Length: 100
Length: 94
Image (cartoon, rainbow over all chains, first blue to last red; front, side):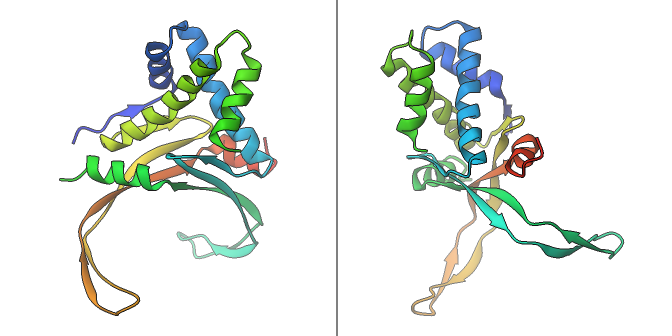
């Protein structure tokens, strides 16, 4: 399996091919998609994309962590983390596509 | 926020585009990500996060209802890691 890494450029190239917009505008639209999703998440909203998956923000409470190298105890502040739950469709496509 | 709301926001910002083209644009973005992972590729979107595929080894599981032992085959699952900028923004640091 030759693993590739796609970036924003590949996504805007796909948009460019799919809809007859300029490369520049395609790139801006990809950016808008990511920005709107990020902004909603920062506001604490869930972002639910049908047949893709759900991004949700969870609150983690404070805990005592440990530096694994030194064994030293360090306080970890309460924080917000983002979790992504893939849809069944995505899970199935990823599982089927990577079957050995 | 759901897919249709995301499409609406982008349509509102781009009055020169047809609604159906905005739909195609948004759908293409998500389709590219899923399609890449189905091929075993990664998608790295700096500042937002990275989508990748993780391998789960085969294991012997147990049906929690019956207690019966079942063999679970090796499989690949989608994984998302939040980008640094978004993680900081979620915590009011950027």
